[in-house]
Length: 75
Image (cartoon, rainbow, N blue to C red):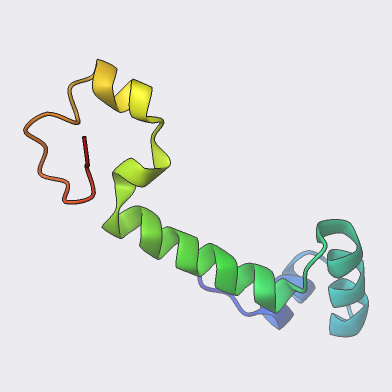
């Protein structure tokens, strides 16, 4: 979902972007724009290095660490 902060503001029923942003920041601890940037960076990281987001014991149990096509696997 690639929506701007103002689009989301109006979609969830706020009429003021500043009111929405202020409440969002108070509840989440970061501004909506910073949160959106962080989430987009995280999606990119997950896409490029998915095994870094899987506990190593789980990956090992499923054999993902042996003969893996993932470059980030280090044993």
